[in-house]
Figure 1 (cartoon, rainbow, N blue to C red):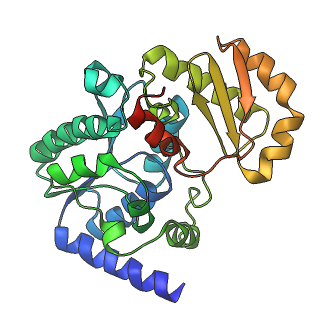
Figure 2 (spheres, rainbow, N blue to C red):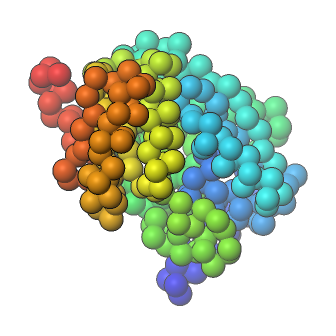
Length: 275
């Protein structure tokens, strides 16, 4: 914690140097911590948390963002984003996230200019550099800063610091957008995103906490966390029946379980055209 505390102080000092910020706010662990620290350091008149709203954002995620902002006095704005209308996004090549984030930061840039906020910031942390993240290039094109990463804060440190602040997000599972569950090469559509959202609601209703439903067209592939994998097998029959009711022909459980960056394991396959 002493090391993490020193990094937190660097973060706070940097936010003060920015003077005012527009935070890309998903309501997840990282952006929630960043928004809380930003409102502490800058006050509600010099920061704004903005959430992009589209079919790729689940209702549960949006509700979490609203609840957190209200609980901590964080000014919060929701803006509709139109990435679904961009064929470069919907075709779902490995660079899909670049077009999504370009749309998001374009909208947030407009908000920042109207509100007189000096710096666009996101919740990327120091661990994110190890994964394939084309959205980072989009942020760079719009001058977005990543103060958590710049302070050297890792995910584990952000969770520990969030816990010390009493934030309910400290142990929340990662929750990237719904489109991140669609296998590359399969087009992203509102219908498929809705299938994923409903499937994950069903699994959550069975008491599972950390998992993903990967959309492979007619097949739903469930990744459970290692701690929940055995329970997933025990519930397999019920889950298969309920998910087939959403239109999936087959439901399978991934034997390797949930792991960070699993979608990107198929990049070499996509590159060869073997979809």
